[in-house]
Amino acid sequence: MFSFLFCLTIILVFVVFKKKYSYWIERGVTQNFAVPLLGINWKILTHQASEKEIFQYSYEKHSQKRYIGDYDFLSPLLIIKDPDLLQQILIKNFEHFLDHRQYIPPDIDPLWNKNVANLKGNKWKEMRSSLTPAFTSNKMRHMFTLMEECSNYFVQYFQLKDEDVIEEEIRETFSKYLNDRP
Image (cartoon, rainbow, N blue to C red):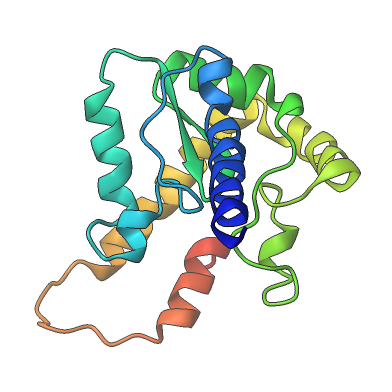
């Protein structure tokens, strides 16, 4: 009786994982092999590869595809490779992709989670609508020239002349640089 229940449990677990890891196949998306429960993270957890190496491998393995499916533990993960498709998602259809996975829990770093890329739902919509007018193409062009001018001053200040070493308080220096103060 015990062996029957054990076999039934194994079969049930297999069916559940088979269904869970066929998310991209059901949608006609090419996907990588995923280890049950771990997805693509099994190489990271066993210290065989870094996250960068895993994505690089996926990118090269499916070089002709515009996007590929993967799994982060049990969650489906879509890797966009085509720059035109990425631009369409990030600019034209951005309102459809408003809830992103949070890497840092809100209680650990509340300031980081107020970043527009980490906001969710209505908070994200409100922040996006207030920030969008500041990033029109004309304003970005104007900002670029100001940023270029400011960074040129910054580089000129730190170019070594007769001295071998320049000592500066880095926090104060970057504060002046970011606020464009001499």
